[in-house]
Length: 282
Image 1 (cartoon, rainbow, N blue to C red):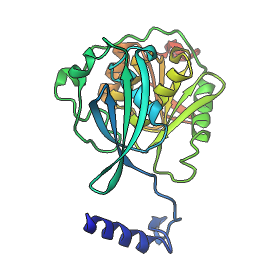
Image 2: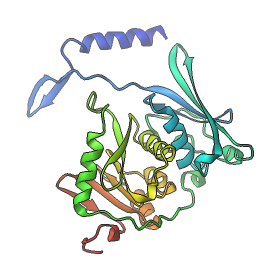
Image 3: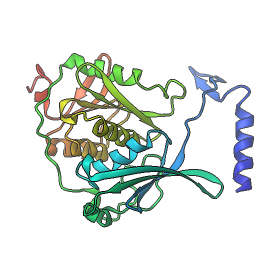
C-alpha cells in the first residue's frame, strides 16, 4: 500500500510544475496541466446484496444506483424502491462507496439472477456477467414515435457538451444527455456506461419520460449502451463516435434509431430513419 502511495505522489510531483509532454504538429512540447477526474470503487448494493462493483466518479450516486437497477433489469420501476443510503468505506487504505438501495418486500427475486460481484475496469458495461444469456438478454422493442429533425442532432450534441461542467475542468470524462427537443439533462462519469446509468436514474427520479426524447452520448456506441437505452424506452440513441456491429444489429432488431459520428455539421444515420423526417429512407 505504501509503495502505491509513494508512486502516485512521485508521479503527481513530476507532472505538476509544467504539465505533460505533448506531440503536436510534428513537435514536442508541454500540454496544459489539467485536473484528473476522481475515481473510486462504487458498490451497487440492493437489499444488502452486492450487485456490481464499478470504478466510477463518486458523484450523483443515488442517480447511479437507481439508473443501474433500472437499466440492468433489477427493478421495473421507481416505486419498487423504499430507500437509499450512501456509505463511505475504506478498502486497503483507499476510499470507496457503497450505494445502497432498499426495495419493497417481494421485489428482490431478480437479484439472485443478475448478481454481479467482480470489480471491472472503468465503466465496464458487462463486467461480472457470468453467461452469454445474461450478456445478451431478450431484445426489448422500442415503440415510441418521437421524432427529431436532422438539424436537431447537432443541437442535441451541442446541448449535451455544454452541460458537461466537469469536462470543462478535465477532458477525461464522458457525458450522457437526454434531449427533449429544447434542452438537455446531462450526467457525467469517467465511464460511459456509468454516465448513462446516472442519466437514467435522474430521468426516473425527476419523472421525465425517456420515450419522448433522444439519448446523446459523448462516446462510441456499444451493444450494452443500446440495451440500456432500450430498457428505458429511448427511441433515438446518438453517439459522438462509431458504433459496434452488434450495437447496430441490436438497434435494428429493437426498433431504435441509431446515429453515430455526430458533429455540429453532420452525422451517420444507421437504423430506423423514419424518426428523422426528410431522411432518404423516411
